[in-house]
Image (cartoon, rainbow, N blue to C red; front, top):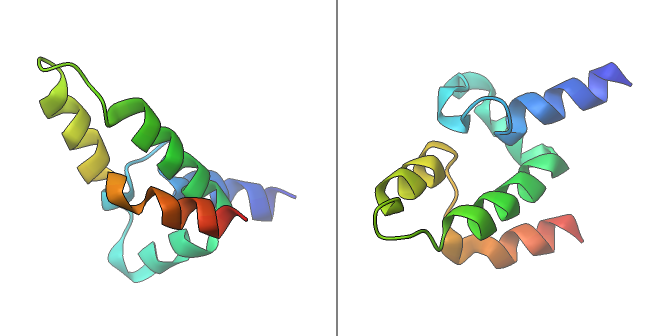
Length: 79
């Protein structure tokens, strides 16, 4: 069980930004279903920020390699 769950948390971007994951293992994030759920949560939480917080919201999305235009890909991957 931990061999499946721990990598999900590591590669999903929940506890660590995905841009901090070493390049040689970063491809694993696309195999983890939690990455897509976390991506959707980030899109819906940070895509419509107030004017004063817009810079911080965009930074969070960039650090996790999340593009709001790709939300439908995340939905498709979770199905």
